[in-house]
Length: 176
Image 1 (cartoon, one colour):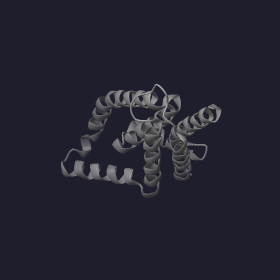
Image 2 (cartoon, rainbow, N blue to C red):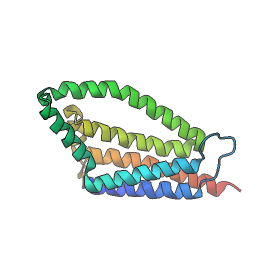
Image 3 (cartoon, rainbow, N blue to C red):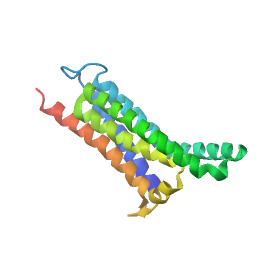
Image 4 (tube, rainbow, N blue to C red):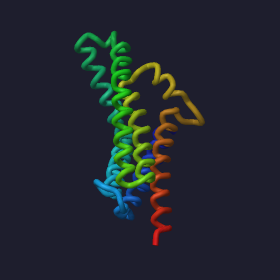
Protein backbone atom coordinates (compact mmCIF):
# COMPACT_ATOMS: atom_id res chain seq x y z
CA UNK A 1 0.00 0.00 0.00
CA UNK A 2 2.99 2.32 0.44
CA UNK A 3 3.63 2.37 -3.29
CA UNK A 4 0.00 3.17 -4.04
CA UNK A 5 0.00 5.92 -1.42
CA UNK A 6 3.04 7.50 -3.07
CA UNK A 7 1.54 7.21 -6.54
CA UNK A 8 -1.73 8.84 -5.47
CA UNK A 9 -0.03 11.54 -3.39
CA UNK A 10 2.50 12.54 -6.06
CA UNK A 11 -0.10 12.45 -8.85
CA UNK A 12 -2.41 14.69 -6.82
CA UNK A 13 0.43 17.11 -6.07
CA UNK A 14 1.60 17.21 -9.70
CA UNK A 15 -1.93 17.83 -11.00
CA UNK A 16 -2.67 20.48 -8.35
CA UNK A 17 0.60 22.29 -9.05
CA UNK A 18 -0.06 22.10 -12.81
CA UNK A 19 -3.45 23.74 -12.32
CA UNK A 20 -1.88 26.41 -10.13
CA UNK A 21 0.76 27.02 -12.82
CA UNK A 22 -1.93 27.31 -15.49
CA UNK A 23 -3.85 29.93 -13.56
CA UNK A 24 -0.92 31.79 -12.00
CA UNK A 25 -0.67 35.47 -12.69
CA UNK A 26 2.26 37.72 -11.94
CA UNK A 27 2.08 38.90 -8.36
CA UNK A 28 2.23 42.72 -8.06
CA UNK A 29 5.26 43.92 -6.13
CA UNK A 30 7.15 40.60 -6.45
CA UNK A 31 10.51 40.37 -8.20
CA UNK A 32 12.15 37.51 -10.05
CA UNK A 33 10.56 34.51 -11.70
CA UNK A 34 6.79 34.62 -11.72
CA UNK A 35 4.70 32.27 -9.63
CA UNK A 36 3.89 30.25 -12.73
CA UNK A 37 7.51 29.15 -13.11
CA UNK A 38 7.68 28.07 -9.48
CA UNK A 39 4.48 26.06 -9.92
CA UNK A 40 5.97 24.42 -13.02
CA UNK A 41 9.09 23.45 -11.05
CA UNK A 42 6.90 21.83 -8.39
CA UNK A 43 4.80 20.13 -11.07
CA UNK A 44 7.88 18.65 -12.75
CA UNK A 45 9.39 17.55 -9.44
CA UNK A 46 6.24 15.77 -8.27
CA UNK A 47 5.82 14.16 -11.71
CA UNK A 48 9.40 12.86 -11.52
CA UNK A 49 8.76 11.54 -8.01
CA UNK A 50 5.65 9.76 -9.34
CA UNK A 51 7.77 8.16 -12.08
CA UNK A 52 10.33 7.14 -9.48
CA UNK A 53 7.67 5.34 -7.47
CA UNK A 54 6.80 3.40 -10.65
CA UNK A 55 10.38 2.45 -11.58
CA UNK A 56 12.23 2.55 -8.24
CA UNK A 57 15.17 4.74 -9.26
CA UNK A 58 16.01 5.49 -5.63
CA UNK A 59 16.62 1.78 -5.04
CA UNK A 60 18.91 1.64 -8.07
CA UNK A 61 20.93 4.58 -6.68
CA UNK A 62 21.21 2.88 -3.29
CA UNK A 63 22.28 -0.40 -4.94
CA UNK A 64 24.86 1.43 -7.05
CA UNK A 65 26.38 3.12 -3.98
CA UNK A 66 26.39 -0.20 -2.09
CA UNK A 67 28.17 -1.88 -4.99
CA UNK A 68 30.80 0.86 -5.15
CA UNK A 69 31.29 0.62 -1.38
CA UNK A 70 31.81 -3.14 -1.62
CA UNK A 71 34.26 -2.69 -4.51
CA UNK A 72 36.22 -0.14 -2.47
CA UNK A 73 36.19 -2.44 0.60
CA UNK A 74 34.51 0.08 2.89
CA UNK A 75 31.01 -1.36 2.89
CA UNK A 76 31.48 -2.81 6.38
CA UNK A 77 32.28 0.69 7.67
CA UNK A 78 29.31 2.28 5.90
CA UNK A 79 27.41 3.18 9.07
CA UNK A 80 30.04 5.72 10.07
CA UNK A 81 30.08 7.13 6.54
CA UNK A 82 26.29 7.28 6.40
CA UNK A 83 26.15 9.09 9.73
CA UNK A 84 28.86 11.53 8.63
CA UNK A 85 27.12 12.19 5.29
CA UNK A 86 23.82 12.91 7.01
CA UNK A 87 25.39 15.06 9.73
CA UNK A 88 27.31 17.12 7.17
CA UNK A 89 24.59 17.34 4.55
CA UNK A 90 21.55 17.86 6.77
CA UNK A 91 22.40 21.44 7.82
CA UNK A 92 23.44 22.35 4.27
CA UNK A 93 20.28 20.81 2.83
CA UNK A 94 18.13 22.58 5.43
CA UNK A 95 19.77 25.92 4.60
CA UNK A 96 19.34 25.39 0.85
CA UNK A 97 15.70 24.33 1.36
CA UNK A 98 15.05 27.42 3.49
CA UNK A 99 16.64 29.68 0.88
CA UNK A 100 14.69 27.94 -1.91
CA UNK A 101 11.37 28.25 -0.07
CA UNK A 102 12.06 31.91 0.72
CA UNK A 103 12.74 32.60 -2.98
CA UNK A 104 9.55 30.78 -3.91
CA UNK A 105 7.64 32.86 -1.35
CA UNK A 106 9.04 36.11 -2.77
CA UNK A 107 8.03 35.05 -6.27
CA UNK A 108 4.59 33.63 -5.60
CA UNK A 109 3.66 34.18 -1.97
CA UNK A 110 2.60 31.73 0.70
CA UNK A 111 0.89 29.35 -1.71
CA UNK A 112 4.06 28.67 -3.72
CA UNK A 113 6.10 28.47 -0.52
CA UNK A 114 3.74 25.80 0.86
CA UNK A 115 4.14 23.71 -2.29
CA UNK A 116 7.92 23.94 -2.17
CA UNK A 117 7.99 23.22 1.56
CA UNK A 118 6.05 20.03 0.79
CA UNK A 119 8.56 19.19 -1.90
CA UNK A 120 11.41 19.76 0.58
CA UNK A 121 9.79 17.32 3.03
CA UNK A 122 9.55 14.65 0.34
CA UNK A 123 13.10 15.22 -0.91
CA UNK A 124 14.47 15.01 2.64
CA UNK A 125 12.76 11.63 3.08
CA UNK A 126 14.19 10.53 -0.26
CA UNK A 127 17.70 11.58 0.75
CA UNK A 128 17.51 9.64 4.00
CA UNK A 129 16.18 6.63 2.12
CA UNK A 130 18.92 6.78 -0.54
CA UNK A 131 21.68 7.17 2.04
CA UNK A 132 20.05 4.14 3.68
CA UNK A 133 20.92 5.11 7.24
CA UNK A 134 19.77 2.14 9.31
CA UNK A 135 18.53 4.23 12.26
CA UNK A 136 16.18 6.23 10.04
CA UNK A 137 15.23 3.20 7.97
CA UNK A 138 13.98 1.45 11.10
CA UNK A 139 11.62 4.36 11.66
CA UNK A 140 10.64 5.09 8.04
CA UNK A 141 9.77 1.48 7.31
CA UNK A 142 7.50 0.96 10.30
CA UNK A 143 4.00 -0.09 9.24
CA UNK A 144 1.41 2.55 10.19
CA UNK A 145 -2.21 2.21 9.12
CA UNK A 146 -1.49 -0.27 6.34
CA UNK A 147 1.46 1.64 4.82
CA UNK A 148 5.05 2.30 5.79
CA UNK A 149 5.72 5.60 7.53
CA UNK A 150 7.74 6.86 4.56
CA UNK A 151 4.55 6.66 2.47
CA UNK A 152 2.78 8.88 4.97
CA UNK A 153 5.72 11.33 4.88
CA UNK A 154 5.38 11.44 1.08
CA UNK A 155 1.64 12.00 1.45
CA UNK A 156 2.19 14.80 3.99
CA UNK A 157 4.63 16.59 1.69
CA UNK A 158 2.28 16.19 -1.27
CA UNK A 159 -0.62 17.43 0.88
CA UNK A 160 1.33 20.63 1.59
CA UNK A 161 1.74 21.13 -2.16
CA UNK A 162 -1.97 20.49 -2.78
CA UNK A 163 -2.82 22.92 0.04
CA UNK A 164 -0.57 25.53 -1.54
CA UNK A 165 -2.30 25.05 -4.90
CA UNK A 166 -5.69 25.36 -3.19
CA UNK A 167 -4.59 28.61 -1.51
CA UNK A 168 -3.46 29.89 -4.91
CA UNK A 169 -6.82 28.93 -6.38
CA UNK A 170 -8.73 30.62 -3.57
CA UNK A 171 -6.69 33.78 -3.97
CA UNK A 172 -7.31 33.79 -7.69
CA UNK A 173 -11.04 33.29 -7.28
CA UNK A 174 -11.30 36.17 -4.81
CA UNK A 175 -9.38 38.66 -6.97
CA UNK A 176 -11.42 40.92 -9.23
